[in-house]
Length: 229
Image (cartoon, rainbow, N blue to C red; front, side, top):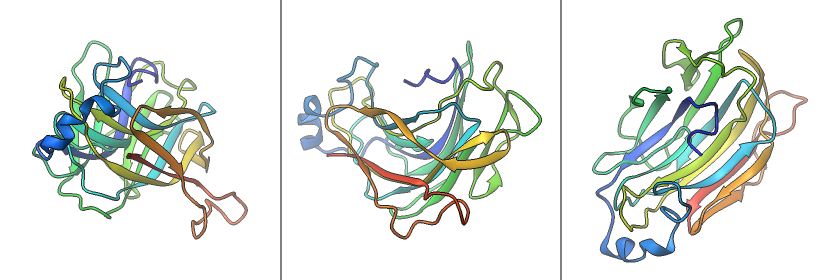
């Protein structure tokens, strides 16, 4: 799944790493998502958009403390948890033939703390992208060759088991999920298409009650919760 975009990957989210797992979590590892789908220990709970777009944004909130026995958990358009590390906001850039570039942006994110994150193609610059955090640019322009008009955005919770039979726990709320109809913006509500839901994980659509629309005439942005169950 982490290569579904176009052989390159640019994600943004919250991260916290392992070291918080319990003996009970390890004993129950065979019963939960990580490692059950043949994807090198990765497992998911979230959605892919029905349409190709030029970006995605969401407000992501960890709603419970992560329990990470090994590897990490994450919620992204990017969000993640990693061993012995407090939750953080990060950007990850992966290009063919190169090691992933991991960029910490905000340290020590608390349960209930929300951040607006976005990955957006730059207007007038095809194949050039930028990460946005809380309404401000968080990275320099990033070239992802051949990426324009090829990306169906994804918003998802993620667990990686670090190669061990463990059960990582997480809960992330995704609100105001929207996709860019053109480079630079033209935001419109996210329409969920393919559902990622590995064993032991849940995806729950949240009520739009109280959520604000993208404009006075636009429908309410999509919201959901991804969690271990």
